[in-house]
Image 1 (cartoon, rainbow, N blue to C red):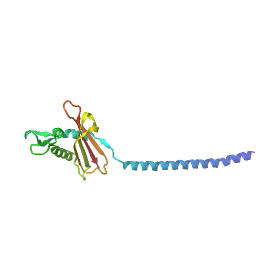
Image 2: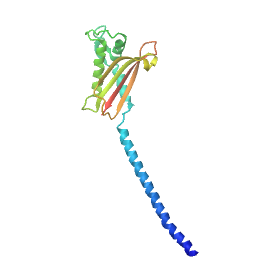
Image 3: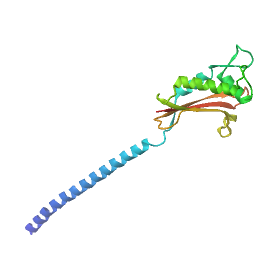
Image 4: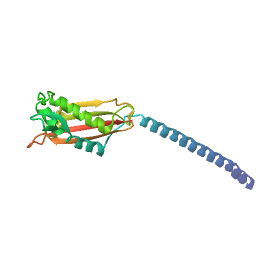
Amino acid sequence: MKKSWGKKIINMIPKSKKSQHEALGFVLIVAIVTIIIVIFLSLSAGKGNVMRQNSVEISNLLQASIYYTSECAINFVPQYQEVQDLISACYKNPEQKCLNGTDVCQALNETIKKVIEQSLRISPDSPNKAYKLNIYYSPLNNIQNKEIILLSEKGVFDKCKSRPGGSYSLPAGTFSSSTINIELEVCVG
Protein backbone atom coordinates (compact mmCIF):
# COMPACT_ATOMS: atom_id res chain seq x y z
CA MET A 1 0.00 0.00 0.00
CA LYS A 2 2.81 2.33 0.69
CA LYS A 3 4.21 1.82 -2.77
CA SER A 4 0.96 2.67 -4.47
CA TRP A 5 0.59 5.77 -2.37
CA GLY A 6 4.13 6.84 -3.24
CA LYS A 7 3.49 6.26 -6.93
CA LYS A 8 0.46 8.52 -6.74
CA ILE A 9 2.54 11.34 -5.30
CA ILE A 10 5.22 10.87 -7.93
CA ASN A 11 2.64 10.84 -10.72
CA MET A 12 1.01 13.97 -9.31
CA ILE A 13 4.18 16.07 -9.30
CA PRO A 14 4.78 16.08 -13.04
CA LYS A 15 1.11 16.83 -13.71
CA SER A 16 1.11 19.86 -11.41
CA LYS A 17 4.28 21.23 -13.06
CA LYS A 18 2.72 20.57 -16.42
CA SER A 19 -0.41 22.51 -15.46
CA GLN A 20 1.73 25.34 -14.08
CA HIS A 21 3.52 25.57 -17.42
CA GLU A 22 0.18 25.60 -19.26
CA ALA A 23 -1.15 28.36 -16.98
CA LEU A 24 2.03 30.40 -17.46
CA GLY A 25 1.77 29.99 -21.24
CA PHE A 26 -1.85 31.11 -21.19
CA VAL A 27 -0.94 34.21 -19.13
CA LEU A 28 1.85 35.07 -21.58
CA ILE A 29 -0.48 34.73 -24.55
CA VAL A 30 -3.09 36.98 -22.89
CA ALA A 31 -0.39 39.56 -22.04
CA ILE A 32 0.95 39.61 -25.62
CA VAL A 33 -2.55 39.96 -27.11
CA THR A 34 -3.34 42.79 -24.64
CA ILE A 35 -0.16 44.65 -25.58
CA ILE A 36 -0.97 44.31 -29.29
CA ILE A 37 -4.50 45.63 -28.72
CA VAL A 38 -3.22 48.61 -26.71
CA ILE A 39 -0.68 49.47 -29.44
CA PHE A 40 -3.33 49.17 -32.14
CA LEU A 41 -5.79 51.40 -30.23
CA SER A 42 -3.17 54.06 -29.56
CA LEU A 43 -2.19 54.18 -33.23
CA SER A 44 -5.77 54.33 -34.45
CA ALA A 45 -6.69 56.97 -31.85
CA GLY A 46 -3.81 59.14 -33.07
CA LYS A 47 -5.29 59.16 -36.57
CA GLY A 48 -8.73 60.36 -35.44
CA ASN A 49 -10.14 63.85 -35.39
CA VAL A 50 -8.04 66.40 -33.59
CA MET A 51 -10.12 68.06 -30.91
CA ARG A 52 -10.25 71.81 -30.64
CA GLN A 53 -8.32 73.10 -27.65
CA ASN A 54 -9.14 76.37 -25.92
CA SER A 55 -6.13 78.65 -26.06
CA VAL A 56 -5.62 81.70 -23.88
CA GLU A 57 -3.20 83.09 -26.49
CA ILE A 58 -5.83 82.92 -29.25
CA SER A 59 -8.45 84.56 -27.00
CA ASN A 60 -5.97 87.30 -26.08
CA LEU A 61 -5.18 87.85 -29.78
CA LEU A 62 -8.89 88.30 -30.50
CA GLN A 63 -9.31 90.69 -27.58
CA ALA A 64 -6.34 92.78 -28.70
CA SER A 65 -7.37 92.73 -32.37
CA ILE A 66 -10.70 94.48 -31.73
CA TYR A 67 -8.75 97.59 -30.70
CA TYR A 68 -6.66 97.59 -33.90
CA THR A 69 -7.24 100.79 -35.87
CA SER A 70 -8.34 100.22 -39.46
CA GLU A 71 -7.90 102.42 -42.52
CA CYS A 72 -11.65 103.09 -42.61
CA ALA A 73 -12.98 106.48 -41.55
CA ILE A 74 -16.75 106.81 -41.57
CA ASN A 75 -17.44 110.38 -40.40
CA PHE A 76 -14.22 112.32 -41.00
CA VAL A 77 -10.67 111.45 -42.02
CA PRO A 78 -8.65 111.54 -38.82
CA GLN A 79 -11.24 109.37 -37.03
CA TYR A 80 -10.33 105.88 -38.24
CA GLN A 81 -12.45 103.06 -36.91
CA GLU A 82 -11.25 100.28 -34.64
CA VAL A 83 -12.12 96.68 -35.57
CA GLN A 84 -14.86 96.54 -32.91
CA ASP A 85 -16.50 99.61 -34.48
CA LEU A 86 -16.33 98.01 -37.92
CA ILE A 87 -17.94 94.84 -36.56
CA SER A 88 -20.86 96.85 -35.16
CA ALA A 89 -21.16 98.93 -38.33
CA CYS A 90 -21.06 95.82 -40.53
CA TYR A 91 -23.78 94.17 -38.46
CA LYS A 92 -26.06 97.22 -38.17
CA ASN A 93 -25.64 98.60 -41.70
CA PRO A 94 -23.65 96.40 -44.11
CA GLU A 95 -24.31 98.91 -46.91
CA GLN A 96 -22.43 101.67 -45.05
CA LYS A 97 -19.26 102.92 -46.71
CA CYS A 98 -15.97 104.27 -45.48
CA LEU A 99 -14.99 107.71 -46.78
CA ASN A 100 -12.57 106.03 -49.22
CA GLY A 101 -15.55 104.22 -50.83
CA THR A 102 -14.91 100.77 -49.32
CA ASP A 103 -17.82 98.92 -47.69
CA VAL A 104 -17.43 98.66 -43.91
CA CYS A 105 -17.78 94.86 -44.10
CA GLN A 106 -15.01 94.68 -46.71
CA ALA A 107 -12.83 96.97 -44.56
CA LEU A 108 -13.53 94.70 -41.57
CA ASN A 109 -12.60 91.60 -43.56
CA GLU A 110 -9.36 93.09 -44.88
CA THR A 111 -8.32 94.50 -41.50
CA ILE A 112 -9.03 91.38 -39.45
CA LYS A 113 -7.29 89.15 -42.04
CA LYS A 114 -4.25 91.40 -41.91
CA VAL A 115 -4.09 91.26 -38.10
CA ILE A 116 -4.53 87.48 -37.88
CA GLU A 117 -2.20 86.58 -40.74
CA GLN A 118 0.58 88.85 -39.47
CA SER A 119 0.16 87.73 -35.86
CA LEU A 120 -0.06 83.99 -36.53
CA ARG A 121 2.06 83.87 -39.73
CA ILE A 122 -0.31 81.57 -41.57
CA SER A 123 1.38 79.71 -44.45
CA PRO A 124 2.10 76.15 -45.59
CA ASP A 125 5.75 76.59 -44.54
CA SER A 126 5.04 77.79 -40.99
CA PRO A 127 3.72 75.83 -38.00
CA ASN A 128 0.33 77.57 -38.36
CA LYS A 129 -1.13 76.09 -41.55
CA ALA A 130 -4.65 77.54 -41.59
CA TYR A 131 -7.29 79.45 -39.66
CA LYS A 132 -11.06 79.86 -39.52
CA LEU A 133 -12.61 83.04 -38.17
CA ASN A 134 -16.30 83.37 -37.43
CA ILE A 135 -17.92 86.61 -36.23
CA TYR A 136 -21.62 86.36 -35.48
CA TYR A 137 -24.44 88.07 -33.62
CA SER A 138 -26.13 85.99 -30.93
CA PRO A 139 -29.45 87.29 -29.57
CA LEU A 140 -29.67 86.79 -25.79
CA ASN A 141 -26.64 84.46 -25.94
CA ASN A 142 -28.64 81.98 -28.04
CA ILE A 143 -26.08 80.38 -30.35
CA GLN A 144 -28.76 78.47 -32.30
CA ASN A 145 -30.22 81.72 -33.68
CA LYS A 146 -26.91 83.31 -34.59
CA GLU A 147 -26.56 85.72 -37.52
CA ILE A 148 -23.25 85.49 -39.35
CA ILE A 149 -21.47 88.82 -39.74
CA LEU A 150 -18.19 87.58 -41.19
CA LEU A 151 -16.65 84.23 -42.08
CA SER A 152 -13.00 84.22 -43.04
CA GLU A 153 -10.51 81.43 -43.52
CA LYS A 154 -7.14 80.78 -45.05
CA GLY A 155 -5.31 77.54 -45.68
CA VAL A 156 -6.48 73.94 -45.45
CA PHE A 157 -7.38 72.16 -42.23
CA ASP A 158 -5.60 68.93 -43.15
CA LYS A 159 -3.18 66.92 -41.03
CA CYS A 160 -3.44 69.28 -38.05
CA LYS A 161 -1.47 68.12 -35.04
CA SER A 162 -3.59 70.41 -32.86
CA ARG A 163 -6.41 72.91 -33.29
CA PRO A 164 -6.08 75.67 -30.72
CA GLY A 165 -8.96 78.09 -30.70
CA GLY A 166 -10.38 80.92 -28.72
CA SER A 167 -13.28 83.28 -28.55
CA TYR A 168 -14.19 86.75 -27.44
CA SER A 169 -17.58 88.39 -26.97
CA LEU A 170 -18.65 92.00 -27.37
CA PRO A 171 -21.93 93.43 -26.11
CA ALA A 172 -24.23 94.03 -29.08
CA GLY A 173 -25.99 96.98 -27.53
CA THR A 174 -26.02 99.21 -24.48
CA PHE A 175 -29.10 97.73 -22.80
CA SER A 176 -29.08 94.29 -24.38
CA SER A 177 -27.77 90.92 -23.25
CA SER A 178 -27.19 90.02 -26.90
CA THR A 179 -23.58 89.56 -27.94
CA ILE A 180 -21.33 89.64 -30.95
CA ASN A 181 -19.04 86.63 -30.74
CA ILE A 182 -15.68 86.23 -32.39
CA GLU A 183 -14.28 82.71 -32.70
CA LEU A 184 -10.91 81.75 -34.16
CA GLU A 185 -9.55 78.25 -34.74
CA VAL A 186 -6.00 77.58 -35.97
CA CYS A 187 -4.56 74.47 -37.62
CA VAL A 188 -1.12 73.77 -36.20
CA GLY A 189 0.75 71.20 -38.24
